[in-house]
Image (tube, rainbow, N blue to C red):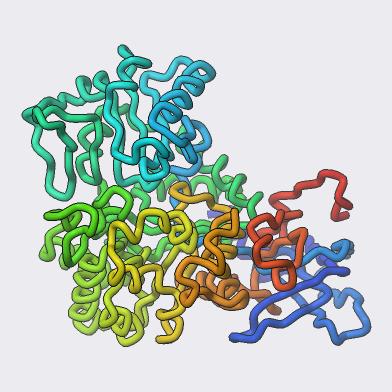
Length: 563
């Protein structure tokens, strides 16, 4: 109680507390005011809130000191570009933290290269009961783009269980030892919403898709609270270094929520987290019944739930209306029947929660939109800003329904540039026209909240901005972009990572743009996002990151320290 009283005393009676006013000048500042991009040359804030923006047409820049301030700090921005803190509207913070501590298989070019990466990791990380990793993508393997099997892993690790998640988190690769510990045999049946891949003789190959992954994962000892805290802090510090000041954590448990609350109380949150409770998960209903939550300092918020309707396109788990173009008689996976899905949605809506549903395939998106069309009027929650996460493959009719139902499209631009080498083969020449359809959605006045889905993709927001603007990879391929008619402008892309992402989390009055009274969340970057060559946007580097008026990251490196 004493802590709560002292907090309110400091916040509401600021004159009794030490206030710090800071002025950052000599900058190229940009923020959005409505849909208009505004440029400014200095920013002043006291403690965690902005006092004044000095727009470029103002000739005099001097601190306008609130009567509560006891001192003023002036910082030379050395001509760097200052932006509102960028927001990732869909990431997985704990998984990202763990990925920084486990075998990294991203960008491997063959099955053997992935195994070699695991071998190197094991040499330097001894003492683990299980070897775990993430990031392989068989589509990128040059000699053979088929799913791997357990054979090469068995040769390298005959006595140690190995479990490696695919880059999208929707498939896993196990060796024979891991399957033995999990009790997997030729007689084990695939669960609903999942698939155990088996060979021609009916034996499991070691590949488990979507809900089948739990058959292996339940045999791995759960993380302790301290292990989770360590991974979360490691992840948040890394995200801050990339220019992210807020993340929508897409699917966490009641236990994770308690850990975030503890980190908030310990003042150990480098960035803001807007969490989505994963449904179903342990104690999810009891958590929903407690209602939404926001910490006093707004560093942690819980106002939404996350449901997964289908799998991913790369593992052919995305649920399609018609068969996959490259796999006849296969339409993907639905993770819940419609009655169960309806129950989850209506329960959350009636409890006052925003509902955010993972839907990648056109069938999954259609089913989710049908549910929203029925349940939003029934629960009177049109203003709750319900979302579809990914919204990756859509029919023309369903694109229209996003606008009519006031549904936010939470999309990840780097998925398009990563998937371009396989998406058209999966979908064919017609369905691909409704995939990754950013421009079409924007033309219908649909709000797009941008993210990365890290660790599926890199969390670097400049990769996402580059992909949204160019629809090219880092080698500037293909020429003029992949389906270039769906590109965003620079301002539109910037908006998806700032004010619209904040809006998608019910936080646009706090963050997402820079204005008097809003939180002092901002970043300084090396190059000017709005004038540098668009092909170089992904290379931009963060000089410093500020959250709640505090510097949480600086690259230092003799580039003119900000002091």
